[in-house]
Image (cartoon, rainbow, N blue to C red; front, side, top):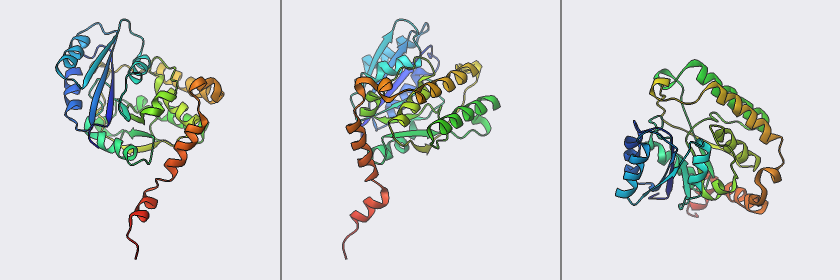
Length: 266
């Protein structure tokens, strides 16, 4: 599993935590490259980011002159990915890079092309009651609209096969990129594999940016995509034969099927 993972880090005014999270990311043996995008920060974010890029060949830093939003930064990073798998890593300290192996395992084994890290909202890992309820409401809406069953749509840990990242034709600019990713994955017919992860919620005073308005926008994004045609959503990126082939291959990688094939004949 060595160095097969690209880590995409969108950052806006995260000088307080960026150096620490970059250090932890680069400690991970799975990480082959870090694509850091400064989304128009006005603090020392770009200085820290560019400094890491100068001192470590695995880090490439890009700067957007104005603040365009998390979604725009992620799209910029996707265009630069070079390795087979990629994950979004927020620049704060809410998500722990020690969870990369559990996110990567289903991808590397060929059992999934999409893996979400599921947060456990309990005790000190919850930002607030309403934050958790809002996340639940958006997730339930996705389950109803797309006839699926996922646990944590708004999870920041979304790891995908790079080929799929590139074919999603993402449009969300702000935090609406989270439902945008999920809805497009489901519209293409992929199953989302979920694994438990660590989560350390930060408060408003620590820089939490998500608000209730983002939850409302997420509901609107889910409904809009569900009512859109696949051709309109994916345009030239829509290649049904590719997606059918991938999903057939995934169905053949059931762990019990692989195990039985590997057992010696008696």
